[in-house]
Length: 360
Image (tube, rainbow, N blue to C red; front, side, top):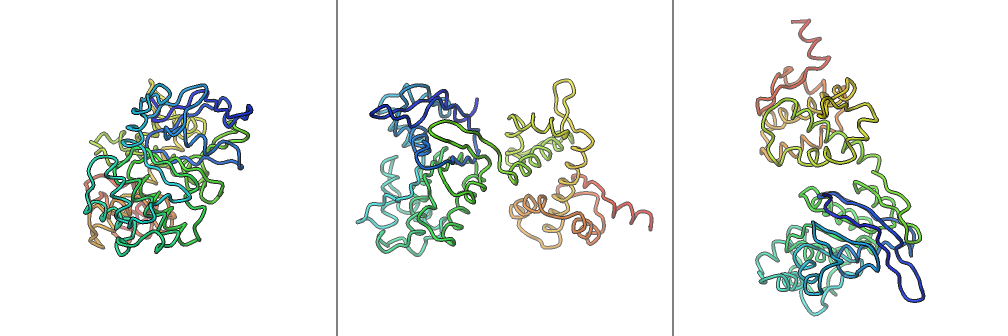
């Protein structure tokens, strides 16, 4: 079951004005979705329904198996308290409380306030030197980061953001978006309302609303390529047959159970054999190149640069998507055309390895 299921939802206001009409959509766990559309298209209404701040007149909204349309008011309060983090464009900070006190207030509503935890949450968003400042003493970007720390302090599984960069300059926008990226990388489901095409392009998928109706949805081009790579890498590891730790290729494993796999079949990257996905020749070559880049990067960072193991994996995951064939071959030659990565897994050979073998 998808993490979020919106089924034929309609929300109408006074005088018969429809904010949403018959909207149906699904959002996977750990997915980052941008809800886009012109003013008045129903974006904020949809976000309010997902947050349990409003209820539809028709249809159902199910989050993590809980049908919000059947919940009592106390149950909705517990839902928001336990599962949802909210980030608004207007910040909604208490003006006479310091940054750390605003975060502690969110803790208090959930369970017990812990000043040390609140301070650490603010340090994680880069506000370690602004703990005792009032909202009036903070910039717009700093206020938004307090809001993010407040939204995350109770580790919600669903993060809802309504135009979170609307009042920010370019530098603070970049900082805030980097924070959202880190949160999503850590496994949180992010649903963000925005009208900014640049911001929307950073999500995994865009959902377009027009006049209260679903006008379409699509993966952003760069994210679609990256998601396809994640699935190919996961399928390669499965084919190798060794144990895959939960933190390795977690996104690829999740995406391999979605409709993305059907798209990969249509693109001639994957084919099914006895109900199990396998590679086409084209998909196998692309997967091999990914694994080769990843494992060569691991070898370089681990043995040449002697980086910490956790950092090695993080950087290797980044470099597997951007290294050109020429640079990959140069790294391979520099390392002496290694056969195994630091974990003892085979590194697929490349043209440079075959040339070196002939010369030897």
